[in-house]
Amino acid sequence: MPDDEPSVLRQLARLSTIGISLVAATAIGLLIGLGLDRLFGTKPWLTMLFALFGIAAGFLNLFRDVGLIRKS
Amino acid sequence: MANGMSKKPSGGKSLWVILAALVVANLLVGLFLAPRHVGLHNPPLLQLPNFLASIGVPGEWLPSHITFTWLVMTILVIFGWAVGRNLRAVPNPVQNFAEVVIEGFYALLDQMIGRQGRAFLPLVGTAGLFILTSNLLANIPGFQPPTANWNTTIALALTVFIAYNYFGIRKHGLRNYLKHFCGPIWWLAPLMFPIEFIGHLARPVSLSIRLFGNIFGEESVVTILLGLSWLVMPYLIWLGVMLPLSLFTAVVQTFVFIMLTMVYIAGAVEEGHGEEHH
Image (tube, rainbow over all chains, first blue to last red; front, top):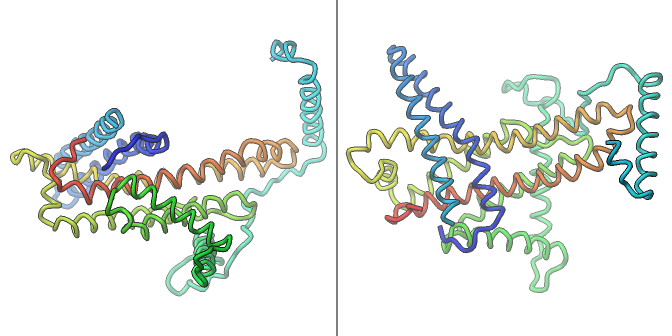
């Protein structure tokens, strides 16, 4: 991404993703885990694993967005 | 409040008197004259009979978000046709306006994606104009914005999701595109791939829920406020507060949507080049 001077609106667009994408990633990980558990019959394990993946994905997104904002 | 009133200069005092009189009048009207049942669910201005019942759309009328999606499409198609019918080197006002809009999109694309950005004008421009038109439609009484329904926004967000993944695969090939999901260290790939995958899946969800939530919430507040319109105050509040606020929301949410679309496309198209580490 070629970065000229960062405009306020551009930062607003990025910042407004943070809250929702943290929640959305966690929820999607949890849902994938629940679905796979129902598919394979391994009741709690895949749910836990994929919920952790989802939380990790949410925080990865968050750190990326914040890091980008701080840099640009 | 009493302190604030006593410090006001005398010019401000008459305003407070008028407001107080309005409140008293409202209360009197509300207590003695008002209708007791207020209908919130008035039908929108535009309704089509349900001719899609054979393919399983329920109800007597078509759902309003479908009707108003078609209305917005009609507006945009007619506008595009009117502009494209006779293009001149010296533009008439309509063509001038269209050129300003397109130039604005080009500037954004150049800034966000770079040299190859202009190729994505059809996707970004269509999404932006559609969302802007339907958000602004919310401000006309009797019209309902199609973006206040999650079905519309999830369709837009899934289009963007599929499109940017397609652009990335077309640019780098499937193998290189997926390789980027696995992170820089090869033995961390089984850990990184699901995390990146879920992170990408979260994008259309957050895109669609943000747009839907903002427009739907604003629409609900306006509906409830105007449902109370047997008091006179809600009209004033709507004109003074909600109308400017919802015009602002309409523009900002459109901007956020196309901005994020361009960020995602830029990430998909550029991230094979080795750096990307912001």
